[in-house]
Structures are given as C-alpha cells and as structure tokens.
Image (cartoon, rainbow, N blue to C red):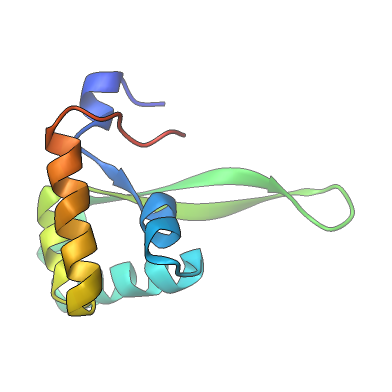
Length: 103
C-alpha cells in the first residue's frame, strides 16, 4: 500500500479501464504496447499483483499497473480522441486534490 501523498501521483489501470468502459486485460494490453514501443517508459509504469479467488476457492494473482503522469501521456498516444479527453479530465481532477488509487 502506498502512502496517500505518493498515491496521488499514480493512477491505477483498473480505474482507467473502469472509467473507459474497457476490460482490464485490454487496458493492460495497451500498457504493454507502450512498454514494448518505448522501453524507457518502464520507469513510469509500476506493475503489481493482487489476489483474487479462483474457481474452486484457490487464490490466483492478477497483475495491474500504476501509471505516473508521463505514462498517462504516452497512453494518450494509443487511445481514441474521446478517451484522450476523458484521460485529460481525470488528470485535471487528480491535480485538484482528489484521492489516489486504492489498493
């Protein structure tokens, strides 16, 4: 878990997928594309895992990404103009003091 001040500087890929009405694995595919095309971006994207309950009660770990502002700018290059506008609004909201991602 990140301290609250640090959390405001990162955006969770699960939140992005939800806001864009997209499946999370598709959002991760876009983020993976950024890393493949721009290896230097890896310092601006942090991959982590969270536990989920699998079929018969087992636990599996699913990855998600935390993106900083530069990674979000790179993501804007790979999404539609409408989603780019949503991303911009989200960044503005973050700068106005709304809470960071929850883990």
